[in-house]
Image 1: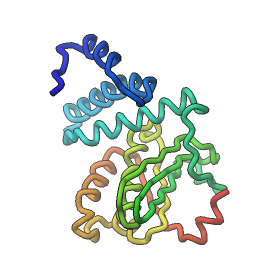
Image 2 (image 1 turned 60 degrees about the horizontal axis):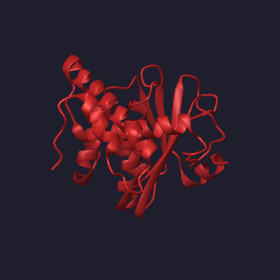
Image 3 (image 1 turned 135 degrees about the horizontal axis):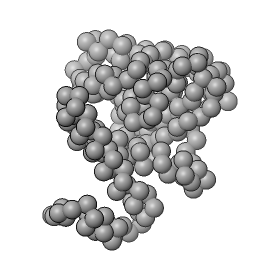
Length: 212
């Protein structure tokens, strides 16, 4: 069992001395600030805005912030290029493509603005999952990433998914099957903090035409 230090200074010292093995020391040290910042922001939202505290969500945001910061500062050392699009969204919208894979699944997103400029790229493995579950997890990740970004207050999130079920369940959560209930409830909570959002059904043929 790890005993938490009494103050932030001591915690920072212990954090930096942690034996990481093969883990990336740079990302680990960056994680300290990402965790504190995520806890602080979520705490303020809970106290000042009455939002429900969700520890899993807080640490998910911290993990995503580490990915953002690392790519922003060292794009060559931490590149994750997943997908590129020809057609930019309209001005005032940010577009995110959500893609899910059946079997041993992974999800990935790319965020671009109305000029077609790539702002955020991200990927992660989610273990064994069917296509519906993978697509819903990808959409949840898209909402989570955008919620943690500086664009959430001024831009609308525009998403595309190859899955008609995902579009339906995200737009009409009451139609989602019971096994998707937890994900759907998380999506509803994330929606509340956004200026606006929209999800569109991009059929597979159309998707291939959009990809470079």
